[in-house]
Amino acid sequence: MAAGDRPTHPVPLRALREASAVVCCDSAYLDLKTAAPHQADTAMVVGDGDSLPPAEKAALGDRWLQIGEQDYNDLHKAVHWTATNLPLRGNRLTIVGATGRREDHTLGNISYLATFADELPWLQVEMLTDHGRLTFCRGQREYPSFPRQQVSIFSLTPDVPITLDGLQWPAEGLRATRWWQATLNSALGGSFTVEGGELVVFQTYEPK
Image (cartoon, rainbow, N blue to C red; front, side, top):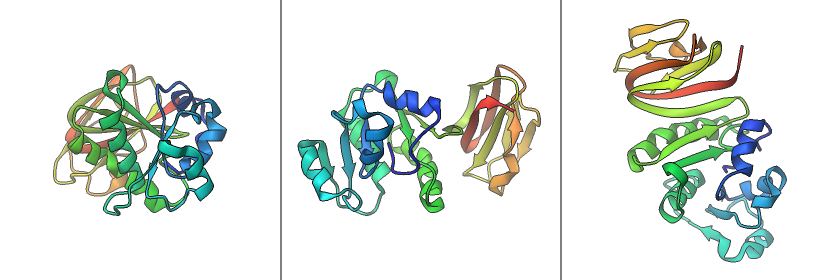
């Protein structure tokens, strides 16, 4: 759980409340107490310590881990600690609370999906917001969907062409040199396929 907007939508809230374990980024622990209070008694809290009150750190005891290096943010620290210290069901890790508040944090956190794919290739990472799901794709991937699910694709490798199939506006060999160029699409049925270089895929929870 990152320290962006506290999740309120049922999908990220369910993921948080039903998680086998919760690891918080620094002050996200304060939001966890509201969003999923039953998880707060066992949650691990990881970060550089710049936004968690001293009293909370003391109360956490050995469930508080301070990592002072500043090359990476608290989300990176927490994900790596989780991946190397906890048994993960199906090698799956879900991130909530990574968007909202400051836009630079939001963009940085979303782009970490590509970094996690490089550093932890065995791990399946998804990011849940109050509006939809963000995942990373390298190469080709088929996504389950439903009619009129809203879909946006963001290319991190604009020199590599993108092919989209199963969407209202398909594409063949699109070079998305700007982030907006493959956004605001819509699924036609039960699945769609994307193919390209390094892509971030956004899917809404509800149809439009």
